[in-house]
Image 1 (tube, rainbow, N blue to C red):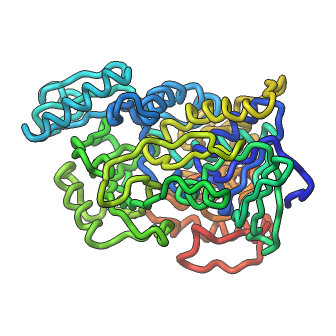
Image 2: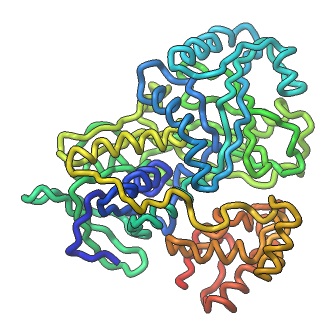
Image 3: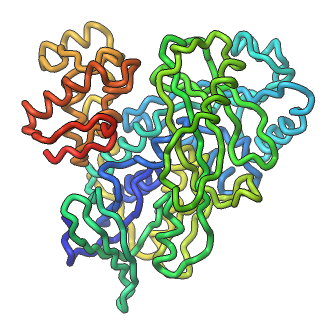
Length: 492
């Protein structure tokens, strides 16, 4: 619960990957920081519904924030992920010209990459491309070795939990209903508490708007009307891990000049699945959280997936999902606007708007820039006791050598009991997910932290065992409703 009389140095609205990166960055300093999030956990919006790709910087016009922050954020990620125990794989990426019509677009990306300082780029003929990815088609490819894959929800959770361990307060299930700046120059944020249906108030000197799809609505509460968010949906298929190893790198088409995305492509994931997607279709502004998947788009994804990976069978498609981009360009224009990262005319109000791709890649660099803006309003003294490494094991039990597994199981018998067979998730890992530092209490939170319920059977084996754990070990007496596993609140 909020302490209504408490004033923070900085408050961040929105607990996506960028908001959580800002929170962790500010947790290095001796100021009190809070994050307000309308969902019961962090990262439930765009931050968990994307390809999980760290982009190199070839796709963005030189001189833009997107270009500079993509390159610098990419370079920062190895250290961030090492500290937080987040898996990162430098797979590289091939952007492929299938015929001569694609060559001008590929040349443009190469020139942009050079201007943006993207390291290690190479133009490769088909023979050289096939040494990287056997069987790949195309007449010319642009190889970017700094492109990488990461778990987007894993990174978001890790940033948030480490920020919490360093003193940041997280107010989950609190939807902002109004914001005003009082006569003393202090922001007063009113929220509706989803757990109690009550009203809470928090005050702050610096306010960071990182509300993603709702960033324009947050700005309007303070009379900042510049910029409108146009949600643009991307749909995906998740493929079975049977195909692990068939795709060695990221394969992208050459995007058109006004395409709202980077085209339908095959994407590796750090967990061994392959993604097909995303599509790019604008949806009405009043449906910005409509994460439906649609039969016509899924048909196109299947067709494109079969073309790019002919060995695909009908049984390899295990799930589909969608994510909505917070675009600043309307449908009639298309393409991509630059990030908006600025202190507005309302002193102390920092607006992060239109942070679509490469927002995941850019998150640590955006956080550093926001820290500089906050420093204009207060002294930032580095903490002597900042803990950069996230507490806990930070490795999946399934990935450990057998000897280490045996030792852990002897020390803690819960490591010896498998709860999720598809993903080899142990009872101890599920318990750690439940007892997370943020106090998040949802099945979706357990899923994202442990990977239980993410395998081929889609929770058929593990969900009854998790529910039994919740009843017997945690006293949960609620009712499970099929189809609501992702949003089922668990008030433990």
